[in-house]
Length: 148
Image (tube, rainbow, N blue to C red; front, side, top):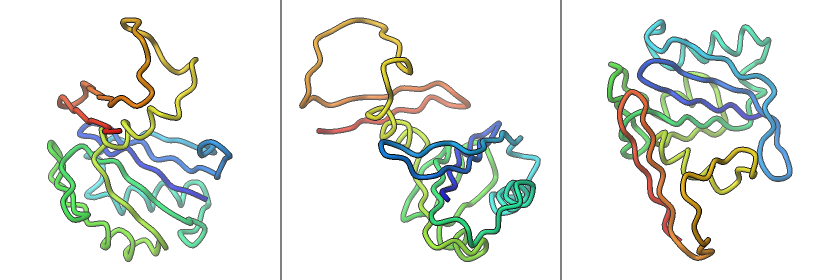
């Protein structure tokens, strides 16, 4: 079972997924008010407990966070949390854990979206070997570039 999180300045989405052929399949996704919790670990514990899932059942956990990630440590832009990948891994007993910027996570996901999940703003000619950019407004304005 996979655990994924989108940790934002206002809300956090946590989800449990099973592996799929093209991409993970969601089993359960829940929204939390970020500042209702003193940190990521208590929020994840509450989420897993409510679902009846033991941390030992999690094969891998990945969290996209609204802030810079340096050497697997994140300081969120609008939340007074410091999230350390190794700290989360050991506190929760996960086998594998990874942190990345939320827009970086979004950019990686764009490549596996289906046609029904996309909206064309301006038609153009696809460049199969071209680069891609993602810009998203949330608590802040985030950008990510995928270089081919």
